[in-house]
Length: 328
Picture (cartoon, helix red, strand yellow):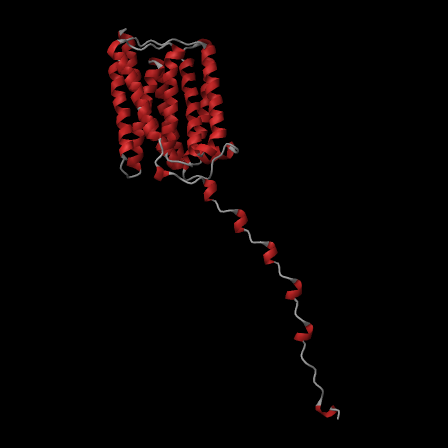
């Protein structure tokens, strides 16, 4: 039990380091993507080239990769719900970081959301002092069913949600759902054996999720896009921990404390992910001029040939008769 508790404590440290690095990586990526031409899934190769040609984006992505490596180590040592709860608290760090980089103060709502997330992290650390921290390998069929349902929901949100919710929010929601597929797949793959096949699901979830989030960055702020994505990335695995991997809650007051911690970090993420009304941006399609308005009307520019041709009778000089030949 002492070894399990030590592993869980180390998992918390790794998860906290991971979410800190990833939060600042999101800010760097969003700032870099804002300077690039429009990214789209319709032209994945061209979009990828634009990203790889940006040194600022590569720095942010390298930071995100380093944070992900720490996250995998945390999942190998601790329960999924515990690690994801720490990651959910990273939205508070994202809010503070975005305010500092933007040279602005956090609003009252953002301060409340950051406070909820940080307090939830503290309660979560206290809850580790008691109860079971075990985690089962999980049923491959149940895990595959969960992943398929989540991926289908992400596709529906992306296709149908852009007109209703806007491109930024739709991409953030779909990207967060796909990220959660990746996180659950990584936890399943750490079980070894046949479950290692879930590595392919993890790669697909992370690649598609990253693509959607980068597109979302061009239509909304970092806190809105990354905040919504992180909310789903963490909330679904927190729920999947007890359902898929049999992760028990501690009994008594510590169990209440852990449930409260889960609720606080998720509530903080929800508060922070809501876009500010003043921060709403027009869609790029709205900002582009209408090509038909800029193109001159050929019919208006074409002149009437009869109007442009001079009248010969009007232009010809009047003939004069020599004076000596005047007729009486």
